[in-house]
Image 1 (cartoon, rainbow, N blue to C red):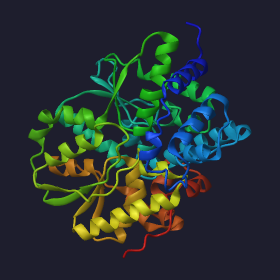
Image 2 (cartoon, helix red, strand yellow):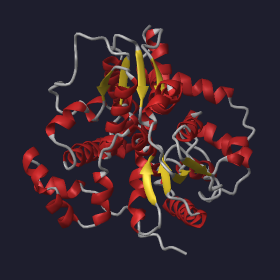
Image 3 (cartoon, rainbow, N blue to C red):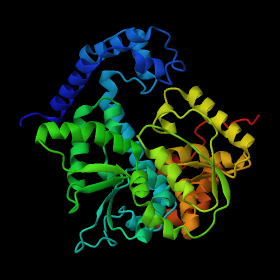
Image 4 (cartoon, rainbow, N blue to C red):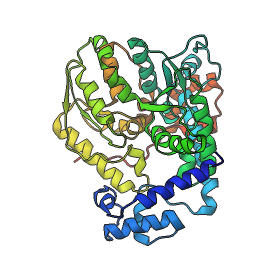
Length: 407
């Protein structure tokens, strides 16, 4: 086969455009249509989107609808924007992980290059692909490893900026660079002796399963592996997990929901219900998108969704608002100082029942809301890792939106 990644992806886009019936139902049900200011007839909007896909041009309403999810970029700036975004991502991940972890723990997450914790003489059950951004909240990734250790599965950890999925470049429209990053990482993931990959990050999962793997199948004739989201993997091993859920966790909790990957929310609910003492409360709030940070183009809408959920959680009298993914935890966790309930990741609750714990240093640092205080708090680790002070100050968690006023 002679197709390049770009030509194969273009062919897939063309095939999807041809298959679209232009009924407009996707525009009708899309939760960002109204907040994005799109008031044109749905069938006209989707017809315009097809025109954009085919020719690069289309009506304003269609451009506005597409840009409500992904901020628009002018073509000349695409590559530069992608390089800049990836540099910022890499810096943020590397610095924030090192503000929280010592060298040995970083190595456990495969972030030192030393591979001291790997066992090359053993074939693991699968590769555990962390992605990049969960390393900013490493207690979540570490709890995932602890849980897998407890139930007796073996794995090889891959992730971080050196194993990029290509989503950052794809968002800026730089398909060529995105394809190179994705193929490089895919080939590393495919070296697993088991041929199975369990993914943590939903962005990476979608990038691989909806873009990279189907495109590679066209260029190479086969997929090197299939991916399973961690929550679906864990629910699939619920019978192995149950005997380790020994401690009661008497809490009324509400799950922060995103329906972007089929079955993940339902799997998270099943896992939480398996924890003795947990009562799951439905706040009856809309579940929108893949993660909270996917609404960068609609900050007012994101703020409205979050405020409504936090207020509903307070009215419900819950003990904790529980997120599945790392980005939602980063977005929400600092609001714990303003509301009468905890904000935690669901693996913290599972870990509590299993006797497993890792401190949530990210939440503690973000709640300080002061660069100098954070730098002082982390001075030992800054020195241990030889971090540059200016780079460190640029990467520390700051308030990403104004404090939400309670009703």
